[in-house]
Length: 134
Length: 153
View 1 (cartoon, rainbow over the protein chains, first blue to last red):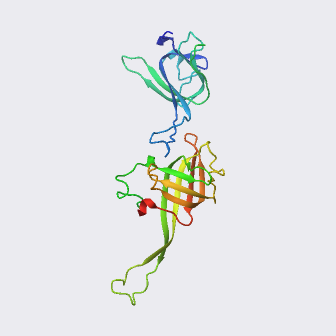
View 2 (view 1 turned 45 degrees about the vertical axis):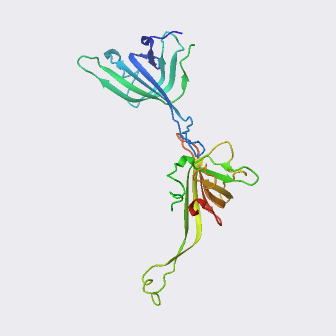
View 3 (view 1 turned 120 degrees about the vertical axis):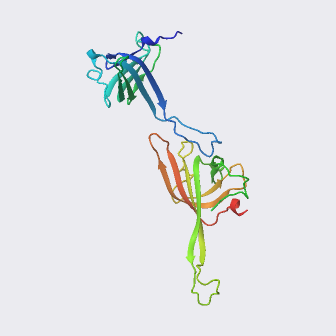
């Protein structure tokens, strides 16, 4: 077992690689409360609907503006086949989100910084593959 | 109406200690998977105020009321579980069914419960939401007498 360096990550959207600096995936689940008189004073919950959210930070490049096609990362856009790699050198170590919706895009620019942006995407379809060692 | 107070319990009790129980013939009582209950006790009000003619000076000009037909309306909110069919013969939570209920403000206090030997199910509500749970609620009304030992003792 060995750790994986962060620079090996990658995000692709429908086959187009994104020049991302960092990403974060939040997998969450609703936990509807079912505490009842027979629970003995202890809160009880059951697993409900599962959600996945991807947020990433990326530089903005003039030659491949991510806000235009083919990436078209704009608020409300539908993005298909979003692949998030832990290690781009190993095919299996990735999440595959069939369809994601762009929740928000935050663009930032400062004198001593690059023009970069942060996007938040929400899964709305099958999560086909979880990270594994395949 | 305060169903229990400082004369019965030394301090306010927390709701999670409650229990709603269906009493069944030839079977053990069933503890319902429920989370809320309420009992509303009321009667029919009759105005028996009569003319002041002939009344004493103290009675004249005041309303007098007679209450009869005392009834208890019970509302229970719970969960639908697949462990036992709530509409099956053992539980029988169907509209028009007559069942027996025991409601314990504090389940560990086995002597102080509200006993309903006969209640008729008035309505049953099954509800679900995609990000919630499948719920089961019912309303019942007492038939004949019921016992409120926690109140009358």
